[in-house]
Image 1 (cartoon, rainbow, N blue to C red):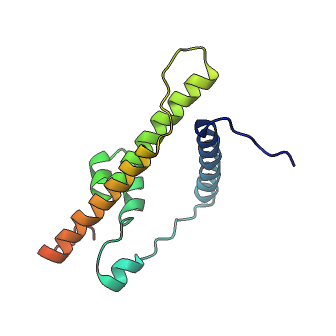
Image 2 (tube, rainbow, N blue to C red):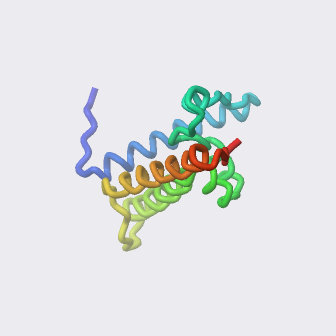
Length: 141
């Protein structure tokens, strides 16, 4: 079997994201066409400790974003909007750069973008658990 070779990290990330996008689209189509529902399991961290985990609200945030409710999506888990927005800009700019003759300055992969996403995730985790621990208010039902 021939081993794939990527010249840059952008080549690797671009092809990886294309494969992930195809896989997610196929799985979503199978679920939709069969009328299946995505199972919703309770958060283990919230069940055991009574605190939100960093990913709490992520699924709901994604579905709100799909339905155009950006405010609700940001409330439930802002890293979802950040990730989807960044990945859209990245993939569109890389695609235009690679497959058209239009001169465009494409967004390139940098670890800084990952660090920003982690910072948003940690900030959201601390903010929601502050309300739980200090004020006794659960922001997400």
